[in-house]
Length: 123
Image (spheres, rainbow, N blue to C red):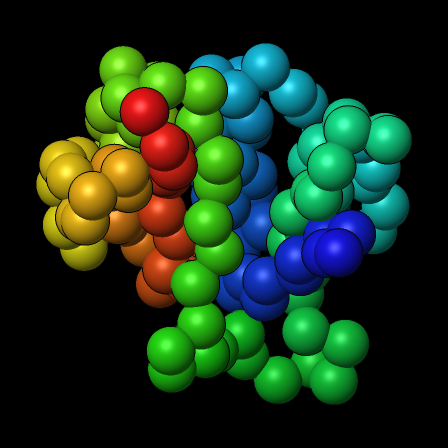
């Protein structure tokens, strides 16, 4: 149902390093790039994520209660994504672990404060 999610950033170069590293771990890369905006994903391969400087010229801000979930292939990849996030300027919002029966996740924020998680369901 979701085609892509766009998040605001106040420092595109810093945020790009963060998302380039996570995308590489997930086996994807930048798919579009133009002045002030970068998008990651695989065309036809599910939802992507984009970063942009806000169009209105105001500073980027974080949505309260907003989170982007990145589907990992297994628990080991959840751990790696979490480690990559923290190594590239992210901050911890909850280390990898089971959250409920059949749901394993790690929570973190990007350098702009946007909340994300890496997760798997089932198994």
